Image 1: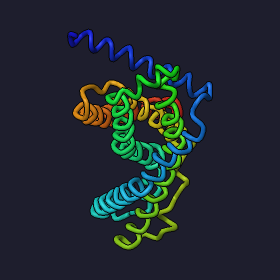
Image 2 (image 1 turned 45 degrees about the vertical axis):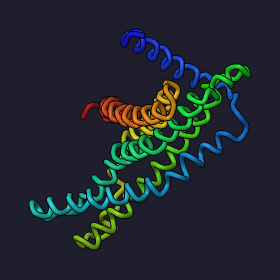
Image 3 (image 1 turned 90 degrees about the vertical axis):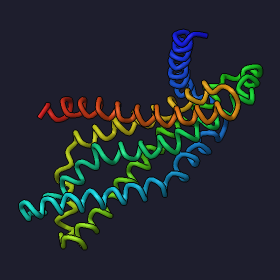
Length: 254
């Protein structure tokens, strides 16, 4: 098969994965209890990873910002408000999604890819079961829910660690630093859009990578690598697009 033909075949498969996932999510036909099990896989097993990562990033961002502003003006009273604002509409959703793209995306691709190369997916088709609805839809729904939960957790941890960093490294009063007044409705809507988009994209892209696995264990490894790269790249592209939409739709282009 030529490279062009293979690309067309994979593009057709990707469109089918997207459409069947959306239809399956709306129809509600899925294995009993599978969504809850996948929520545990996506959420509970990623909780510590996301919390630690966002906590350290919050500390680094606040430390470097306070350090530079302290050298220029010495007025650190505005750092907290701007830090919270950018966490809500940018860093919180995007960094959480990047963490999930590496951990969850790899896991989905590995599980689905293993079933493909061991012909379990073909067995599902022979039994009259649609593999996309059986394998991808529960992970899709779980990812939608748990991406939001983990984003809220990550923002809270980053804010807490940032507040402690400002307090003990630069003597900024926590009441001054923890300023929510700068967070506008547009920030919340932009952040919410990103959470939904990331939560939907990661399982679909990773599931597609798993379904295209070929050639035994080596193929599964390649599919896992493709899933991590493609999911991370998708998050970056969606971040750019949705940030632009949020800027002009919710903040009047200002």
